[in-house]
Length: 382
Image (cartoon, rainbow, N blue to C red; front, side, top):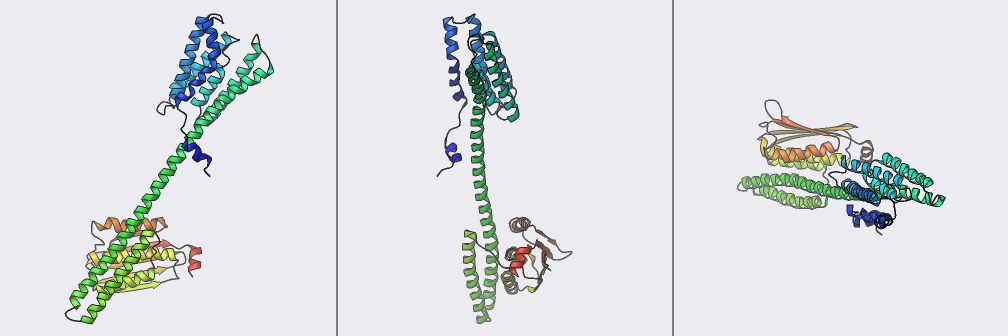
């Protein structure tokens, strides 16, 4: 079943011309002007023309987004009010229907000013009813209540209808923006995950393929072992890519540390890995696993190091990860630094953590990540 908002959203909001037919409310007085049924018909005709012109000006400018918050609608509304009172006071037994039309124009012009609009409509309703006491032909209570109630209600209905359609339009636009933002977030997540996955995997495959080429002429068994690793890495990469596509890919710090040791050993880089502290929650371990994957990939690709140290120090409320090498002080190429490290920084920042990186003194490069540990999640992991 569709909600009321959906039904209204399918309807077209009233345009400025939708309020013009309400001018037929003064048709009776117009006939009296044309037939000479009131004194000084030429003056009444002039007043009516001014009323119609000011009514249209107030409504049209108030429904124009470029003019609605300017002075023109207010000036037109003020002129319309003066003409309405002039006609009613000058012709006590005519032009009473000008008050409901003035109320509609007031609701349209002042629809964004709730208190001012309510005060204005209340005043109009009271005034239009009070003028019936001085009418020479009709002072019935029913007529007084009817004209006063109709005057106040006309503006309230016009304002409520316009504000309702404006709210529905705003909600629809907001929903479209949220949907677009969700698509963008998913696209960024996928591209980031794909970059991290393929960057690491391709580095492992390249390193192990080089090992196969080196070991093949000398040690066939060792070369076959490296080839088997390439096959295993390829199969694992296929699984991870499928998980990344569906959005369910979660890494493991322990797994990534093992993969890092294997990659560093195959690259001829001495690896020293130390881990201490209580067990980490799955989400925290997954984030740190991404840091290990990206950091070790950059060491193999760009550092030219002969040694790499990875240290994980956990505490009950915070965990600290460092990756350092003794290479050229380069963590990634100028092209790759943007994607990998920027993506990691965004991930950790979203979890309340931080990521810093840079040359480590005269020689080497250091990557430092810190993450808070959620107490409830940590208790479940323990």
